[in-house]
Length: 150
Image (cartoon, rainbow, N blue to C red; front, side):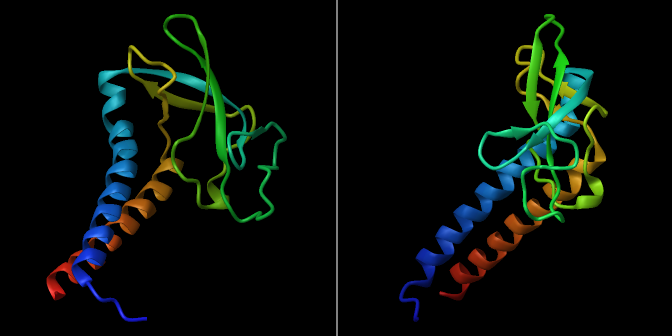
């Protein structure tokens, strides 16, 4: 298949790459600034996110048939306003060795005015985010090369 207009392909790839980079970069940035600008508390892992919005409470089964994939944890905590908040990890979990377990205590941070917008503060969240950022940068570079090559 021959591409007739490299500029359009390059522009589309550039936009997609920037979207990927800024979406996952925003989550990584929240991990950095929320402990200072928001509130940090301890949460408890209560389950794992499977496909869609379902969650599985069984320890050791994330609902995924591929045992090598990581499990995105669901967690709960009590906010400053004494509300029970349930949320899940926003970062992709890519390695089975970094999995969480049911009942594990984790640190979370959230903005003072929106406890439901919490994020896990753990090193196990970083590899998946870095992988997605690298993918976004790759798409940006390829899109830029299409634009420059035309």
